[in-house]
Length: 382
Image 1 (tube, rainbow, N blue to C red):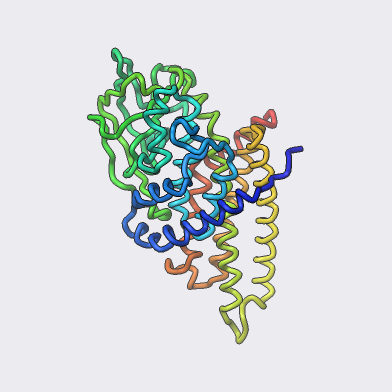
Image 2 (image 1 turned 135 degrees about the vertical axis):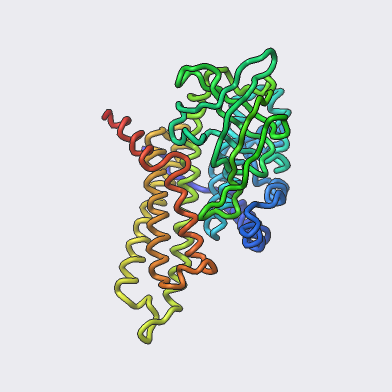
């Protein structure tokens, strides 16, 4: 039985600071970033000034040296609750998803090179795993990295890469030998390297402010000193970090669903039909009662998993259970809340419309629901 998740007064003060940052910096700019199809770099640098980035980076490399996922979770929650899903994805990449590769697999020399900029937000980071022919199947990665003296020569293509247009450093998975699992290695690539090319900013149905791109590598010479950990260990390094990525996605899913439910509760109290607020209709009451209960259960489950993660006990299988359950619930919540808005729910000016399209990717990236169920089935011994 894991310990109950608790937040200290420091966590609550931190949440107030993040809330103010979101209201003052993110909310006013969100529509502009949506129209631009890209977040402004100031999002990262302003977050960096407030100490909202890279909590686990040790002080000697410019960070706060606080390895406490509760702070990570607070940032994601405050962004997702106001519908700033694209911003949450971008900051989560910086804090939860890519950062562990740069703190856990690096030498001191690499840490000095890369981490200070990540802490200040001047270095935006991304990870390039997905390929046009290999989505959830990491062992099917075809991008190659061939050793040539003190460099690796990288050739291949990646797609659906978040922070793809703005990223300053990318952790890429490339094949250093033919072995499906023992042939993958992780390299850190500077996009200014000759042969590195960013493709177009992909047009998505949701997350319009989040830049998502294709990346291509043509004889890109990456210094061997940019190898993360040991050559051939990439597949296992990726597997090791995926539980935290999925936990972060679950944090965002529950917070986003709670946000859209709160907005819908306000809406149904104000919207009249047949001479009275639609909140008085039994169907409205039942739908919202069901969603509130499911989210209460999900929040309790999520908090339990965060508590496990804080003590290093969260397993890959439990993270998979959490990820598929909470993200599917997020999609279902947005869908049912949109229905309660009627025709207005289909208008992008209403938050529920954006919540609906932004939610849809959650059951796909970070491992599809189907992959999550496969992981769980293996854990069951079947």
